[in-house]
Image (cartoon, rainbow, N blue to C red):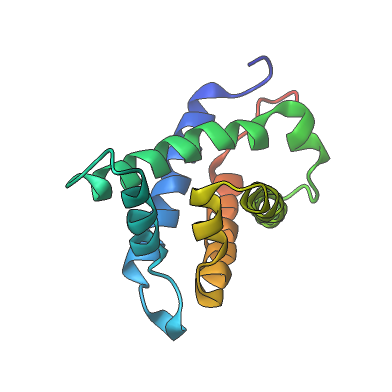
Length: 152
């Protein structure tokens, strides 16, 4: 993609995904939050395609999601539009907006009949709060580590 610092994007997206998952694992139960990875594993079991490998699929899918979805953040037009100028706060803003977009898509698809999304929408409130915080962590890490090309 023209205008993207590709090595920085790959590094930042991989680390941000790792940090997000690591925080979810290591802070499982902290203040009654986090540990959403268990819910993801249970949701993956709905498909029945990866019996016995759900934890690996969850981790791989999470990493792939981080790399693919970070493309939105590093796209030069999006990166310039997200306030403020500071990378960390730019990433936090992006993480918050991203979470709202995820919720919007989740609600539309769940009420449209998607079984996976219905299950996901009905997770406990503490998990929704945890996911919001985790998206802030993901976005903040992404913003902190991504170094745009000099022209941005």
